[in-house]
Length: 301
Image (cartoon, rainbow, N blue to C red; front, side):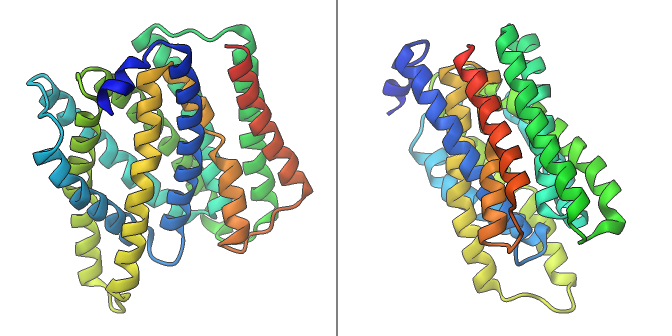
């Protein structure tokens, strides 16, 4: 599999594969967000998800994929604090704001900063048409957030704080996307980076925090449903993060980041179907803008 992935780098087939992987990551990322925002406290949900994907990744990291080259350990040392900060900001955001309001802001901030970062780090440059596509996509994403803010009554007293945290979370998402894209390109085998990322990221932060919170709770949720949610989320996380990272290895980082940000479209559908949040014609039109922006970025590239 690794040799096949590497053989696609820089080819037209690789470009198409990156496109499909980025869209798959968008769907999976929306599912992860809904799982974290759903039935349980966001910290407990995230802790269960991280523990499960870390435990599942451990045997692959230790016994299946080639071990990281010496220079990779310094890169992994940077991965941990960046993702830890992102998770703290994300959990604080979801605790304070309605999912369909804060999620589009998080995802709308990320691609703009990622495109800029990819230009600095990887020398990627968008055409004028692609920047127009980014503008259309961001108009749809932030328009969706503003519309939801005007129509949703839940958690109004903490919404300003939630929106500020959502912008911070989006900035951290851009940082980890750019940094991790550098990491997956720095190793010979992309699956070495992915296996060790999930192993390190999953077991050494969020589960510890979630465990401490669980012990202090007066009314603790049943562990069975929580860990089932974690297992499902862990499997989805492999798809979400793994797909977009492989996309950044196969093609441009900025384009993969923008295409992944079609996730608010999937998030709105999930919010309607699973969380009972209403989707009307105006929100559908705004989601159409998001999709149109992604199409423009791809067509103008």
